[in-house]
Length: 222
Image (cartoon, rainbow, N blue to C red):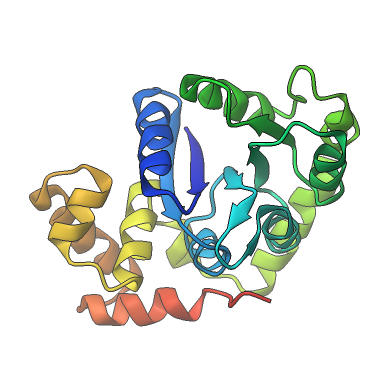
């Protein structure tokens, strides 16, 4: 299952893309954000495989956000969404470490295919500027990520399932079980079961402890 994080300040756009991603059997939306600052904070908590980034965000550029994501989370691939078809934008995205650039004029369903392509390490068709990016040494990126994780080992996080990590990130955002259920399209009882399980794995008795723990692992926007 490929975890996908969506960043766009338009909620309707995020919902449309999320619906397509979640409809796929091999893809799953692990989080969403509407700004650079929120995105970096939540990406650190959810650790997606692919981040889909809008170019224009209220507190910065998706290009700079891509650069920060690639620096902090080298194992996360980035797909840039833009409304402008120009070589300069493609060069800027490639220089920032993006794995592909997709025009917003494409069908929403095409986003899922693009996510699969870059998640597999292949460049998007028609985007020769990213061929070099696709040939990046993923082994080096993986080693960097493992080195960072080894420097601050915490087997409790590794014990959590993907869904439990998603719930934990939303608990850190002070979301109630009902709000989490609505956000993740789950039954409230199912969310309660996830909360009980993750608290047990983390060794906590209250969700406040889990929220503090999750927040302490998140990095502010540089």
